[in-house]
Image 1 (cartoon, rainbow, N blue to C red):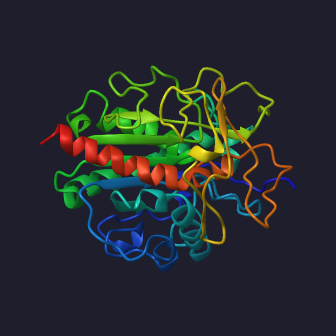
Image 2 (image 1 turned 45 degrees about the vertical axis):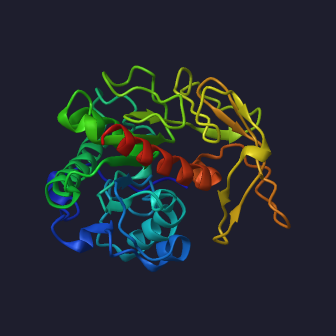
Image 3 (image 1 turned 90 degrees about the horizontal axis):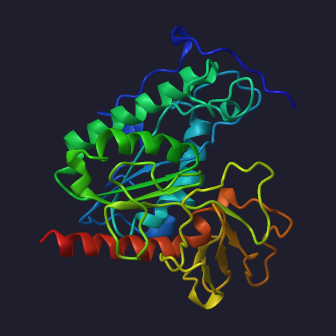
Length: 322
């Protein structure tokens, strides 16, 4: 089915978020939605913050807009019930969660003729992409000025969120004063080269701080048709080290759609730019064994591994800074 679409026009875009108002945030500490509480329990204050940017969920083929309207109730529910519940929840045990709604670019900007793969081109998608980043930049600046109060920061992102986070880190952390506040950047679901940043480096130990981790998950021994992933940083999200494989017995836990954690259900192998995973063995359930691309599950496959690791890094940050 072909996408209905319209060109990007500044006079015809959704209303700008006002981050001084709670309704412009999917999550703020003390205002956790019930879908998140079902997974994490009630909010309790932590020593660190996590700024989370969700992936592309604006994909309605019949909606011609190039940017999401954050006041749309269906879109808001998609963010809460999918991204917040199954992704952002992984960091709640170690940090206070901040997740802004933003006018994200429609999924079509990853396809011609709207593709933003080369940001130097004249694609109609560039305006939509720039608008989305402007929202995130405004949200982050508001967060720093009004909420952070000097706490260390985790950046946690997926897919489109990660692509925006790369620029956010360059603007605010890379060789910038906030670098010393960075616990870790979990930049998941797109290729990031080892030298993407000047001073923010790939982390190769489970208690490293001040750097980033990244991976793109595929079913074992499968690869994308296009070679976009080559050369990308590929973190092992079970060992968090340079170890190229981890067995089921080392896997801490997957968050499944039933809200339960399943431990020791998959093994992984690191390839060039791709993290291969076995099909998770969940008792009594078939885990889409025919699916080759596990992009949609990059985070919840390793939910408990991420949760435990982020706490380790926060503890290490405080150990090094006290």
